[in-house]
Structures are given as structure tokens and as C-alpha cells.
Length: 381
Ligand SMILES: Cc1cc2nc3c(=O)[nH]c(=O)nc-3n(C[C@H](O)[C@H](O)[C@H](O)COP(=O)(O)OP(=O)(O)OC[C@H]3O[C@@H](n4cnc5c(N)ncnc54)[C@H](O)[C@@H]3O)c2cc1C
Image 1 (tube, protein in one colour):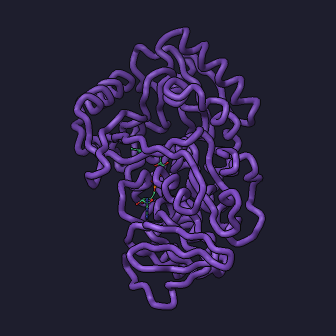
Image 2 (tube, protein in one colour):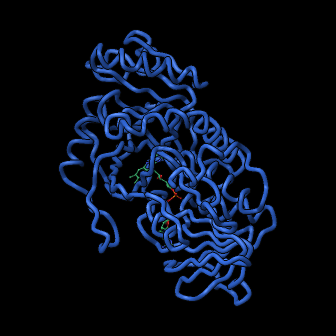
Image 3 (tube, protein in one colour):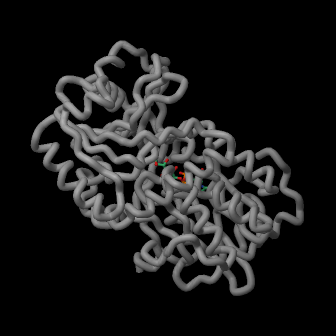
């Protein structure tokens, strides 16, 4: 990308496949520890470039509804989300601000049945250390009087927040460059893990002591190149952003039953998403926005916050999310000494820096800052 790859960088200490939030933060962590780092990215439609900047902590109802079989794994991962958001807060201070606001996330209910669902969800989440409450409409009006008349109450998760990913991505990439990490645009087509080193082919051949596979949905294919199976799937999702309005939405807003995330950037623009499907043909460069998703998504947003109904949608876009089994995948690929996998679980942008940091620690032979045993790739044997 910016710097030419010098011949000596054909051999590095750590080669990272994937330049999304996980790969870039792995690069920062490894380079800060003194490693010579190369990041190779194919320029595919990364979630990192498409994401909405929601800092998720509570379980998303979208996931519980669409993938109920993953609920156990997501619930078991909740303490990781607390650590992940704490790391984002620290990075926001360290890098001079990503427009991060941590005023809590509201998951709104439109019926008493939905409110009861939120009450039972909140009880389970409180046991796992989240700061959650269920608010009735009167309490809600004190903090979010902009919500529509259908809303009867909401769960609030105080640790949730939002940031501007365009700013965060730019600043973190700049930090990786500053630390000497080399970024190469190319597609990795072969990974051969040998006893003494790993050989990676991406247009040209590289050798490295350690590889970190941080290629989201494509990680499964890359792991197969290294001789192991890992189930990763892509999920094309789309987003919308409106023209600016006076800043008034302090919270991240979700719904107890329907797919939506809704928030306001400091620019005043409203970002609307939350898992509405786009369409993807792997032969095309990017996923395509679907009209029915666009209409359904913004109509729901206008229903929840009537004051935004008259705003024009300025832009919409789509990107690839990744699903595995609901939990992050962090650790050495089974039976290898030199290949580390780093795939964040659901809400992967929130988890990205934490997962990247842990992967770098493992590749450096250090102890990660949290116990990564539950996230080992070995569980897919
Ligand atoms: C529309 C949308 C909105 C989202 N909103 C949120 C949100 O608000 N909050 C949240 O927490 N999460 C959100 N997510 C999820 C989040 O964006 C992703 O989970 C996260 O960014 C994944 O980061 P990553 O670094 O693992 O992978 P990615 O950012 O997907 O990057 C993977 C990289 O691997 C590269 N790659 C793949 N194959 C190869 C290869 N063979 N050789 C070289 N490079 C390769 C690709 O080019 C890509 O750049 C959203 C996702 C989408 C799609």
C-alpha cells in the first residue's frame, strides 16, 4: 500500500493475513513488542470498512433469533465484550479520539411480551457482570424522550457505546505504519507451515516465523491451506447513513425482536443498520445493496425514532460479516507451532482490538491478557 516491500521483508517475524481491525491491531501489538511485521490484505469487502461503529456488549436479539444454536456460545463470551469495550475506551484516549461515546445501549420493546423477554435476558446478563436494567416508559422518557409512542420500555446496558469507525480505522492504520509494519495489497494463495518456518505465497513468496490468519470469513480457506479445517462463512449485510440533524441521540439503539442498530455520529448523521441482508456474488468486488432491506431498515428506524423520518438517506453500502459458532476463534491452529488464528465472534469490530492483541501475544510466545482456552480453534476438530 504506502511503502514498497523491501527484499529483506520477504522474511519477517510475524506475517498477518488480513488488514481489517484484527489484523491491524495484531500488527500494532506485535510491532510495539519489536517484531518485524508484514500485513498482506487482498482488498476484499472487509467488515472493518463497512461496519457501523456500534460497541456491542449485551446479546443482540438479531443473533438470538437468527442463530439460536449460537446463543450459548455468545452468552459465554459476554465478559470478553466488557474487556473489549474497555480497551476501545483506552485506545480512544491514547489516539486522540475516535468520537467514542459510552452512554449505554437501549434495546427497546414494543409489547409486554418483548419486555418480559428483555427482563429474563437482563437477569442472565447481570449474572455475567454486565451493568443492565430494564426501564419502563416513564424511566425511558427521562433519558430518551425521542423514542416513538409504540415503545413500552427498554433494557439498558450501560457499557455499550458507539464510535466513528472511519476515524478509528485511519488512526490505527497510521499507528501500524508508524511502528514500521509493512502493508502489502495481494491475495494469499498458499500457506505452507514447515517445522522451521512458514512459507506464504501472495504474488511473491514470503517466509516468516509466525503467521496470524486474521482474514474473517476467508480464514477457513486459509486454514485449509495450512492443513486444518475451520468453518467460516460470509454474511453480506448493509448499512445506511442520513444527512445531519441536531445531535440528540446519545444511545446505541436496538430492538428486542427486530433487526436494527441506530445511532447518531457527532456529525449529526444517523447511522442505520443492524443486520439487514445484502447480496453477494464472490465474483463481484463488493456486495450489492438490496432495495427491500434498505426500505425495511429505514422504515423501522423511523418507527422507533419518529423525529428522523424526514431526514434523507445520503448513502448506503454493504460489506461482509463473518459467522463461525458465535464465539471468537483465537489460538494456534491445532497441531501447528507457527500458525495462529484470530477471528472475532459476533460484533467483531467491538472485539477486534482485543482479539488482535491476544493473537499477537500468542504469536510472540507470550501469555495473552485473558484466558484464550475457551476460544481455541481445536474445538472444531
Ligand atoms: C455492514 C456491517 C456492519 C457491521 N457493524 C458492526 C458494528 O457496528 N459493530 C461491531 O462490533 N461489528 C460490526 N460488524 C462486524 C465487524 O465489522 C466484523 O466482525 C469485523 O470488522 C471483522 O474484522 P476482521 O479484522 O476479523 O475482518 P475484516 O475486517 O472482514 O477483514 C478481513 C480481511 O481479510 C482480507 N482477506 C481475506 N482473504 C484474504 C486472502 N486470501 N489474502 C489476503 N487477504 C485476505 C480481506 O481483504 C479483508 O480486508 C459489521 C459488519 C458488517 C458487514
